[in-house]
Image 1: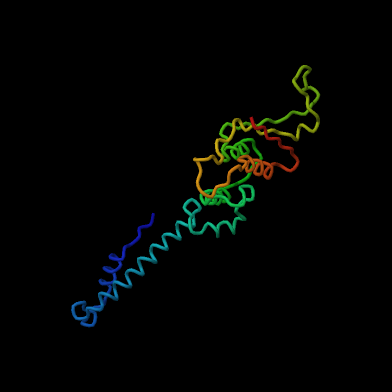
Image 2: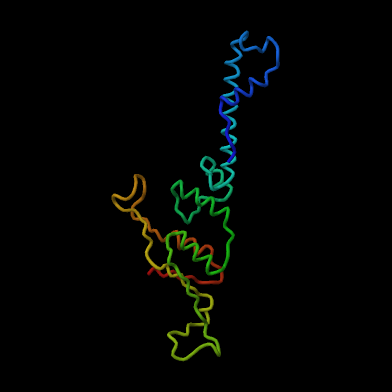
Length: 199
């Protein structure tokens, strides 16, 4: 982290940079101390704000520029609702910046984990094919099954608004799974059909 200079340090630096001569002697011109002090406080304020700006450039530390990041990244995400919490907005900025996208099983399981389903699994359905289908299997499926997959959440999301365990302004009765469904369906390949199994 970049060190922030204090007003005292700036004042000492300005005092040392003064040219020599009687016009710049603090004993002969006592007002000079007040001028240097005013300049030092402003320089320290600008220094602190410059460090704040450096921190705002990284989404991990963003606080003041969240609305600007959201505007650039097309956030807030409609999947997370119309009024997400501020910490959720910051996290969404970071995720959107680092998101790469993928069509692997691990990618969709990671989406489920970020939505509070740590035990999620994914089932790919098989289409009947000559030489691979066996009599006595539980189900052959149809030819369309090759484009179907099921996300098994593996346990209910342990969030939600409860009396005595929430704060003022949060909505009661919100479906905690709606964000998961929206994110999965939005990122699923266009030719596939996704089923979500809430166990």
